[in-house]
Amino acid sequence: MRVVLGVSGASGAALALDCAELLRAAGAEIDLVVSAMATRTLREEVGPEAQDRLIRLAARVHAQADPGAAIASGSCPVAGMIVAPCSMRSLAAIATGLDDGLLTRAAGVQLKERRPLVLLAREAPLTQAHLRNMLAVTEMGGIILPPSPPFICGRVRWPRSPARSRRGPSICCGSARPARRHGPPPPKETEMTETLFAAETPVAEISAQIPGAAEIFRRAGISFCCGGQTPLGEAANKAGVDLGRLRADLRALVARADRTPPADPAALINHLKTRYHAAHREELSWLLPMAQKVEAVHGDHEEAPLGLTEVLVSLSALLDAQMGLEEQTLFPALSRGLSPVDLELEDWFAARARVIELDEALRGITHDITLPVGACGSWTALYGGLRKLTEDLAEHRRIEDGLFTA
Picture (tube, rainbow, N blue to C red):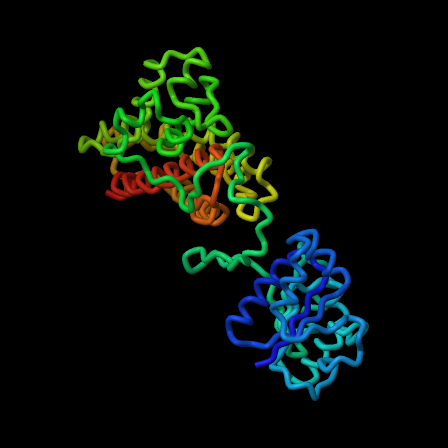
């Protein structure tokens, strides 16, 4: 199978490498044509070696300015063409039949020969001109495929080319950390032993295993990121903090993480207010600035959780409103003996549904709260806190399902 791969100058040049690798893996022979602007975009977005790597994946390479190339003719036996990424200029030229270069000429050939033509159109927001051009290509038989993340089906992630990473093994803000692929597991009592709080334990190890420990360290003036390899005892001494008091605060943090609900209805309501409402408010108060920090410091990393701060701001406001409604109206009504069927829960259910949507958005932005290799202490602590928050939210909903639907 022979496939033409056109690379235009739109942002998202790494898509070309992904497509080329997938085509090669499928056994296709690639006829490659790269526009002049794409050469620059590949270099700036992926790296100076990107185009050479792309060329090595191709069976044949054609110059954009060569109108006599084989793929400019319908007699060339190709199965179809992909333009990845496709700029709005290339889209317009293809839509209007303006064969001003080999890339657009080859695309026009696919349309006239009724062969598959797929355009990974890259632009946002879209003008009427963009939409009309997309419609024109679609009406001629082409496929407009904007490269949108597939959030459905278990939040599948885009395949990534090894060529796309421009960083070394560590992306820490100055200090190396061991490679880690997954976020820290939720705290387990068997792990929260005195061994973890030993004076010799590195601060970063504690903040990675105990969600919320990073905030305790921050308040104490102890670095858990760049200085995270410092042993707990030494870090407390340098910060002028009593080690015993620090350990007590960490133990209290572990104790507050217990999710076991009481059976008594009155005690259950108090449990919801102290274990979940108070915890959500406290944790979001430090997760928000930490998310801002990670986005600011690591914003150029391909796995940076861009947009996380905005989601957390919305989640915090919505949770505060929902919990306020429960504390001021719903819980007192239940305490007076009213049945859940007597309560007006429309606003509560609407807020709950929106919280679930934001929870899903958070997981999508963070790739299901999965850390990249070599994540720094701040990034690790952030994702540990997010994992606990989302698990707490799920358990919070489960308890309230029994309370409000009884």
